[in-house]
Length: 111
Figure 1 (cartoon, one colour):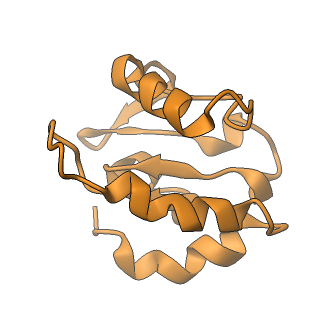
Figure 2 (cartoon, one colour):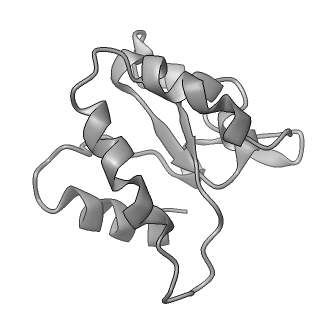
């Protein structure tokens, strides 16, 4: 949801303007008991688009563009986002994020 997602994205972006376009719950479609995000609504070529989400249903149609993450519930010891920094940094240097992210399909839970 935007109320917490925007704060996280702002912190990750750190004023650099890298995370310019953001989509939240209001941009989703309710489907099969979850909210699905249509990444193709962002652009036709998804080579530079990724989704970071704790719900596999959100990216069910775009698993090659997805970075799964566990849910966060106010745990000050949670380092899930920090552990993703090397992956996010590596994505800056690849022509197609799917060439990197598709290698991690085993991390996605079945929906």
